[in-house]
Length: 231
Image 1: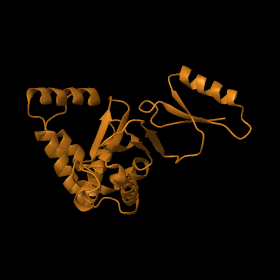
Image 2 (image 1 turned 135 degrees about the vertical axis):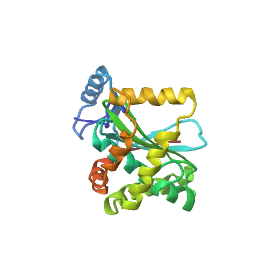
Image 3 (image 1 turned 135 degrees about the horizontal axis):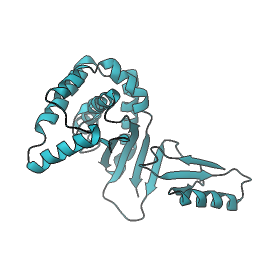
Image 4 (image 1 turned 90 degrees about the vertical axis):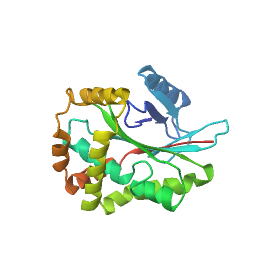
């Protein structure tokens, strides 16, 4: 019997349970019961699937499928975390970045790519999410995989890093405008760093990040799990 948890477990508490040709059904049921008892949701595998793709099929009609990607990331206090966030910016930010430009402006496969770095102050993850017309799911999945692979063969350039730093700093300084947004920003700083950042501190942290730091992050950044929700 094999139990294969999805990663990160705290985000995707799912585990694939499967046996061999001679495995009794009762044995698989017992394994599934065990995983359920520890807070996991067991998925009994009837046939082999892509090892890095979670596919969920809904019984009711939906206007768009949802394609996503998630991978565990360094905690906010790590220097690596900032490199990951800049790498995410190079790949995709809203309507732009390598992925956004190719998928939206050039090919018209999606309307928007939601890209985020999330953390509870300790654990963290990076995610990509996009609504896709059903007929465009396969080419969009292929493009997403190709763009992740391209990060390995063509790591971010000095120009891309410089642009990512400028945009990152601009968002940090001007994105929060209302009292509610400013309060949320400060609360997030406290959650992530245990204190409020000093003026000029972000600029100093950004100055220390090089293209080598981004290239170093690429192997782990591109080893995540894909998810597809469709009919």
